[in-house]
Length: 264
Length: 265
Image (cartoon, rainbow over all chains, first blue to last red; front, side, top):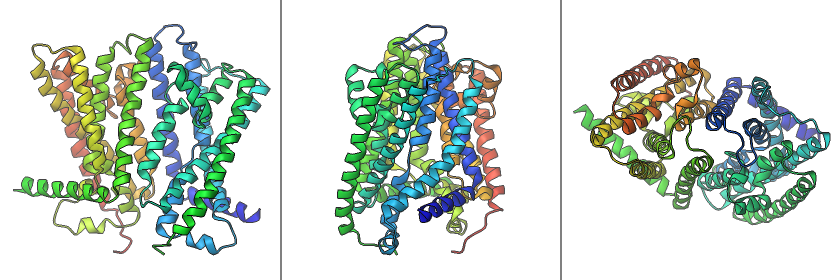
């Protein structure tokens, strides 16, 4: 356990070397949220309810959803792909630490710092919109959302790791990652609640892991989804985590046979 | 003579960029799909909104499509021709700017065209197709050709404004060294221009987005000119901002260059 704590601390130190980056990312997030809020305010313009959402609910959807998305998102694919392409993966094959565990620990370190800063900036925006924001203090809903966020974080981590492993077979993974990212955004409800789309989209989204990073926890927060459906959703997430883990093991086994360590 | 020389270099760089990308054909294919999906996302968003509402701040669906198309074209051109100046980050951070400093061509030009993302030409082409379809929906007025001419002028100005803003922000890298987030910040700011800037109700916000960060002049103003006809004050301010941002950013860049320190070549 000690070695993983050291990895997390080192990641913190590396990230804090360039503090301006942390600050400007937060400013970018705030601007993105503000733009969406202003746009929805202009769209509603005094009109009442759209498919069950009034303006307050839509703004709460945007703020809560973005806060959750900031917590769960991962850019691990780039790190993994770079290690494979540059040959730096080789050092992990001879060290007494599994690469998978090392990279997970590193990501926990990176995300914990980003999380702390992002939560602060998102809470600041929420405070600006206190009069409009809908607060939910129901302990059962909050617990279920918290559990869903942790599982969504693990799912995103595994997914990003899997995309990174594609580098065993190809020299560039940027295109694959960006294509998957666009598909994720469509099915996660990041731009707007998925139930504004035809029913088939909602049904597909429930079966995929992406909606659990934005849409579903936000629906729970707004109490537009009951707890039983939420628990079923947790079940879907657990299935995806197991499935992704098995796929990772298989892909790693195949990939490491192809690995040439070019670049070291 | 100089124009011919720089044009030749630029075309060679574009060809070079395409060859580099096509070395990994599958990746180029997926990048092109990703670019296309991004456009699908934006248009779907607008379509969903207009399924429930008549207008956004007084703009109809076709008019909003003109704004979106204009934004997509501008952003696509910036990525396709100069890679959104992404190359600057690594070159400054790793001290590899030397290769640009010793060449007998302008450093700013060299850095700007050093990297290009050819898959983003798909964004430009689909942007123009979207624009054409949107205009068809609005119908052509008698003075359309004049509107189109001034639209193209203001679009060129938009390109210069965003390029200037981007260059000015990237120049900060000479002091900050590692700040990948700067591109993310500029993208988030300019992404707001894909919405009609009339959504910004507050006067102070409108002034900010018309002067210091003139996102109103990126897509909304060209779209207004194309749809409603040329307005001298808007055209004048568009040209003025383009000149100010382009020249101002160049001066700032050259100042920042004096603070560059190499990391051995």
